[in-house]
Image (tube, rainbow, N blue to C red; front, side, top):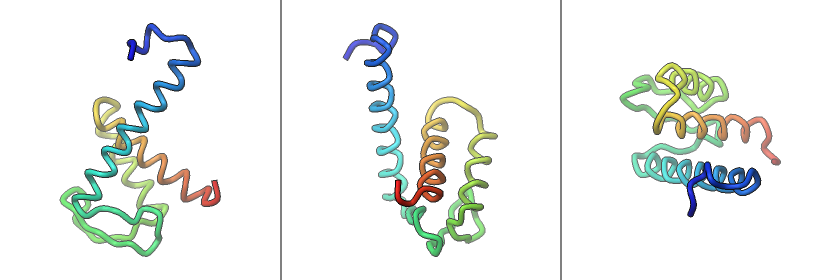
Length: 97
């Protein structure tokens, strides 16, 4: 695939979304392998090193995690984490698409 800065606007849009989606899928898959999941259900509960207290994946909890990642900076794989939290929150607010 040619570099994104050499693409037309339409092709860059499509390639950019596809590449970012692929990175999001990869990160979600890795986190599932670590035992994470259930963002789409209010009842799911988990604990981790980053979030040592156990809490449900409420809308508020997802927002809190998003703010935590925003404070970590806007670069590298953290951008993928931020994108995933935005996806989770958007889907929780729009359950029917």
